[in-house]
Structures are given as structure tokens and as C-alpha cells.
Amino acid sequence: MVRHKANIFAFAILTAGTISARPAAAQAFQSYHCADGTQFLVGFYDYDKRAFLQIDGRSVPLAKRLTLSGARYSGAGITLKIGKAGTTVQHLKRPITACELT
Image 1 (cartoon, one colour):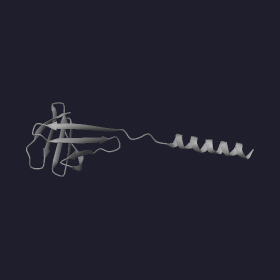
Image 2 (cartoon, rainbow, N blue to C red):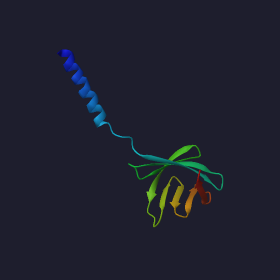
Image 3 (cartoon, one colour):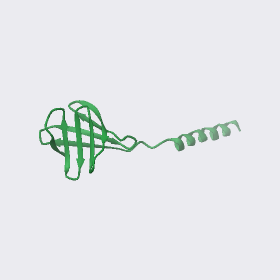
Image 4 (cartoon, rainbow, N blue to C red):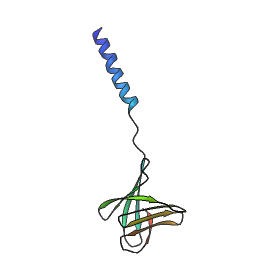
């Protein structure tokens, strides 16, 4: 009888653990290559409005900015614009350059 109760208790613990487990947050990573040779990765997460950019060996969170069309993210001297016409990035004092998905 004790063994039967132990099995039921173990089953209840395992079932509760699988029911309460949350699915992983959705995420999207995009790789870009620009006309000036710059390459970078952008990560987007459902729970966060920022874009996480990895460029020149460092990771930079970019805050979403107000725009009339498309999406614009900026921070730490970097501006990323994603729109219907295409994607552009301005990195520090470099000129704005067109980029495409790779």
C-alpha cells in the first residue's frame, strides 16, 4: 500500500511539473550583410520591444523609436531602420548603408 501511494505521489509531482512548465519565449534572429561590408545579427524577442544587435564583436541593445512607417531602433551611436524599401544601418560616424538579409 505504501508503494502504491509513493507511485501516485511521484506521478502527481511529474504531472504538475509538466503542466506548469512554460514554453520558451519566441525569438527571431536575422543576419544582415551591408553594401560597405558590415555584417551583423539582430535578435527580436516577444517579451521585449528592443532589438539586440551584434556588430563589431559586441552586443548592443537598441531601443525602438517612433517612426511613421517601418521600424527604427537606435542606441549607442547605431541606428537600424527596417522598412518596406529595405533595411539600413548607420554605425557610429559611418554613412548610412543599405543592408540585405543573408
